[in-house]
Image 1: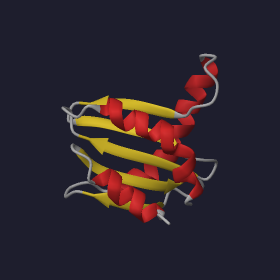
Image 2: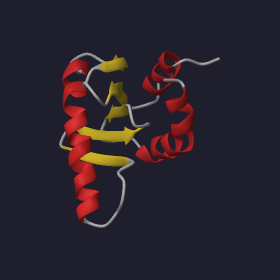
Image 3: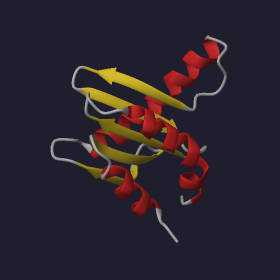
Length: 118
């Protein structure tokens, strides 16, 4: 049976992926991570819960309901952020030229299975 470590490893091997971090929503600590040089998994983990809280507030203010997944574009790449369950979050950092459509599809399709591994 696959583990969360196996899933993080598999996602990190995808083309254009620089980091995959599964984060405890409660304390902002990494549950598991795989990053390339220069990516601070602990720093990402610490910031992610507040980012998700802000995204949830945005969705509620706009009448969009609960936050699930977001795509954030930066000058040097894209961050995919997702709520796995009430206790865990996921962030993936990808290079700017990466086609995130397939990653988003896989996250949506397998989110409950990934959450079940936690």
